[in-house]
Image (cartoon, rainbow, N blue to C red; front, top):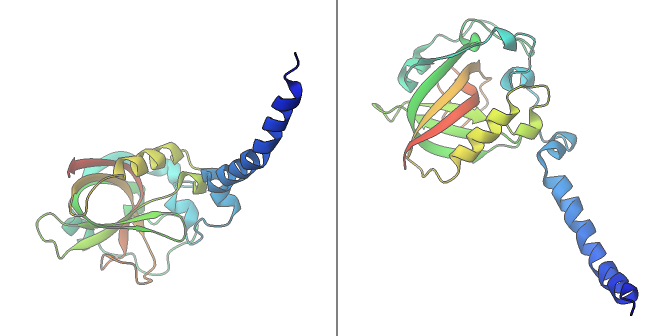
Length: 194
């Protein structure tokens, strides 16, 4: 008794579905994001810790509040597109804040608006890059873990965010600090209250 012909017909019937599913998996995979051009451009190497000075970043986080970060003076002049502005962009900070908003950005980052715990009128931005857009960065796995930790956090939940200081250009970002300082990238995120 030979089972080959029915088996072959059955296999061929599902082959187009398998092919479509494989294509969908490829297109939605983190690595394909970079190939599709959906990753960031402006100061991108700095944003993902893949710039030439990323090894100089002090990874021991400094405890600080959103209100204190917003008070830091913005550097004078233009921001270098491929280099860090010391000392702030060479520092890692840990902040506890209220999560006011989460936005998926066109560059595949997750944009968080953080509120100061004492004065909820004071906000700043923190961003988690997409791991597939972090080519050349040793932190892609940390970005993936931070994104995973963010799942299920309700609006107004309290989070602890560890991230590197980053001065962004002003372009109407929701929740932007008046000095343009962000925590970008976020290298760790922990939910403190839901």
